[in-house]
Image 1 (cartoon, rainbow, N blue to C red):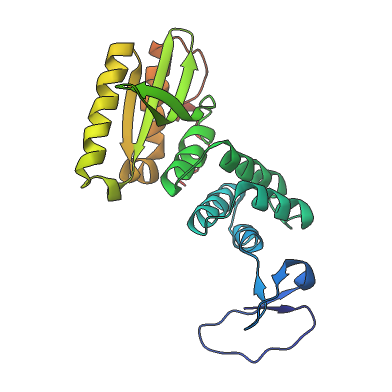
Image 2: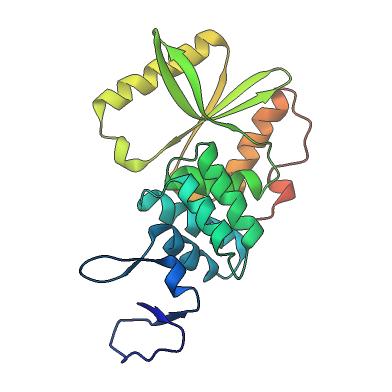
Length: 222
């Protein structure tokens, strides 16, 4: 519950009071009661995290969950500079604009790619599958080819139509000579170091000469 700075509020079990000096800038007037904008709520949740990387994940997860457009998020961060992690949060918001489209993709970006020094992937990369344009989560361009990293959330696994499309994408990738790897939530969130090691190893097989992977771990167990 957000109230203007300097105002009192009666305590209530389960309610945390947040006093804001920027109350008039972040509140949307509604007929029933004023409401803090969704973009500002994302920022407020992010700065409560113990470190910048956790703040980036929270910002992206909250924005995706509340369907906050990247433009609105960037505008909120510009209008009211976060008291912590400002640069990291702007970076995360920019990645949302670049195509991060799910909590799993956001976790892969922060915990696997950036924490382990992997190259920047092209996100929502278009590929043609049986004459239809589809989109892959991550595509890395390396000297000896391309690597597709597909991120499969658990809620899609029981969808037979999605299964057919995924198999068609696998076949199209094979015919086009594109390398591909697939990871789910369990691997990306549970053991990002292991995921980064696999991705880095495949990238090196395709000519990438970077130092990334588990040897350059910056996740600190996140």
